[in-house]
Length: 351
Figure 1 (cartoon, rainbow, N blue to C red):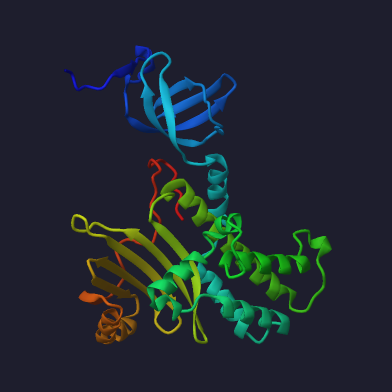
Figure 2 (cartoon, rainbow, N blue to C red):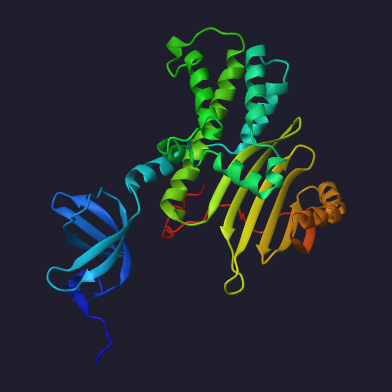
């Protein structure tokens, strides 16, 4: 008895230059939907197939398909509807030119909260926002990390859909502050109210809106490229006592021994006293390997002197310290940059 699965071959005219497309029963593939004047067209790699859909499909949607029937007609079952790509792509294209990083926002918040030219109302608003930011102490425990990342803005809409409380969400607080400032600084300058400290408020408002776009960009990128995976990228301000730092973090599964969970955590921080610092933590089977980099030589020396203390902190967290090192310099590549499933092309959009 033959064990080969039934296969249908879709043949194209030789003049088209496209190879024949074999589809075997049970195969899975990814395609993109295009709505044309002639109806629905499925784009499968370099192939375009006219189709009819029994489920709602929007132009540009990405679909994961399974070959469910190779008779007439050919049946491709939608196993995963990967979302409204046009809206996400539009957001992703709008966001990069408008966004700013947490590092830039932190610099503006420091200036507004500590600078003498800032009006009292702006100074107080900055202090209030500062006090609600995630703390370095919260990030010292696994439960604190989970809580902080859940409130980092990427899950705001999902939490709203579930009816959850969102007053503690970074994106939600950011949106509320932007709306409050916009009442005094409308987009139409003819309706601009004359207020003390208006230039300082407008400058900070631009930074807040740019960081809002930063969160939007990371959300759209995840929805398009890493949705349904455990690969997460975060960019957020973090308070540490009276200091404010910027933290960029990527958490993703790593390769471990068979049946063993392993994780890689890449971080880039801008610390007030140490400057730019990078870290890479690999966790597997209770063992932690940690590497630090610092651009400033004196900062690298200070970190190297703190390695014994870091080992004790890891043991206190129930982990076995592995290779713990520190270098003066910078990583060869940005491990915090989010991954992409997009096909490389002429234009490379980065987040």
